[in-house]
Each structure stands twice: as structure tokens, then as C-alpha cells.
Amino acid sequence: MGDRVFLRRAGDVIPEIVRVIPESRPPDSKPWEMPRQCPACGTPVVREEGEAITRCPNPTCPAKTVSRLRHFASRLAMDIEGLGVETSTQLTETGLVKTPADLYRLTYEQLVDLERFADLSARTCSRPSRPRRSVRSAT
Image (cartoon, rainbow, N blue to C red; front, side, top):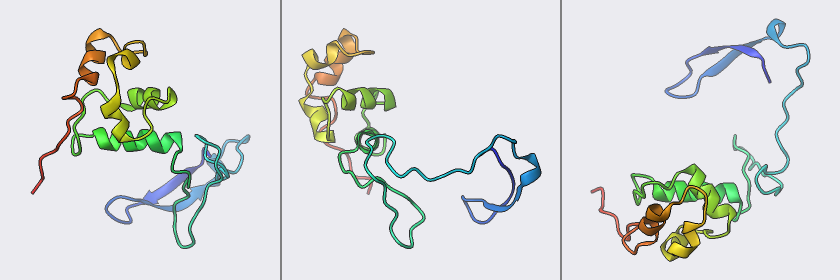
């Protein structure tokens, strides 16, 4: 970590590293190693043969749960305003939400005592109309 590199455009998104500039490397640097366990849940990570990505295989991993909630709440999905990373993380860490379906079971009493939840936001999030129960088709 900390190396300087020369890059070139290699496609639409991902640049290609042309070469490393070792003379700019900090003297106290250490080689980077891929973690062997998921930093969120401690499950050993896996890398499928032929794949470039290392993944956590745990379906109940808290980081994956937060990511699923964020996707579910996104504008292109259910468009749930106010369900950001911090709120998703808090709802996951407190055990109130394990799946997106759990959002529909939240009550005012469960939400009002949480950090960043005032009376109004707890009422809004626990109403039957929030989160939306249907979404218009994009076609």
C-alpha cells in the first residue's frame, strides 16, 4: 500500500496499471495481503476459480445485510427516503432488521429510542404507508 503507479485507460471504467514506481514507495511500507476473513462477520472469504472478486459467503453477514437494505431503499427500487447507510447499519446492529421485509414490521416504539430518530421520523417510518408497498414498473 502507498505505491505510486502509472495508469492508462484500458476500457470504459477500469484503468490498467502500467507500472509501479518503486522509488516513491515509503520505507516503512508492507506488502498488502487479501484478508482471509470477512472484516464484518469473521467468516472465511472465498474466491471462485476464474473470478477476480473475493467474497464473503455468509448470507447473514451484517455488511451484506446493510448493502441489501440500501439497494432495497434506493430510488430505483422502493425509494425509501432517509434509509441511508447509518440508519441501515443501526437497524441491522440492533437486530430490528435482518431482511428488507422487516422494514414493514417496525413500530414507533422500536424506532423512537434509537439514535437519530426523533418523534416525527419514528412516526413516519413506522406508518403503514412507509416504506412503499409497491413500485411502478419501469416499462
